[in-house]
Image (cartoon, rainbow, N blue to C red):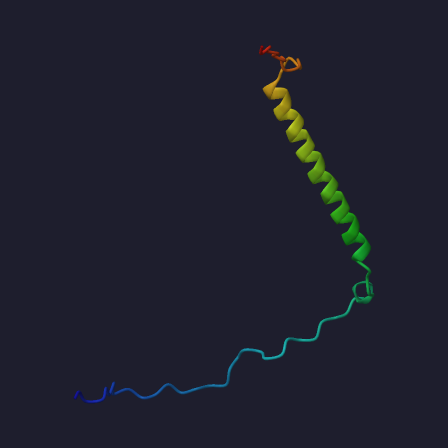
Length: 83
């Protein structure tokens, strides 16, 4: 078996940590300390988002239909008789 490793150095001297463990207390602003009711704002944001998405989808559908049939003519109807 091999011999244990001995680096022939003195161990590092440990000092007290300079990292602050507790951050300083924040100054509380009177306007931010008031409780806010964001549920109504969230509801309106969701409603507006849904309407914007629906509008984007409808514009996409109408654009594709206009590209596919630019003359806005109905599709021809072919009637065949079988006797």
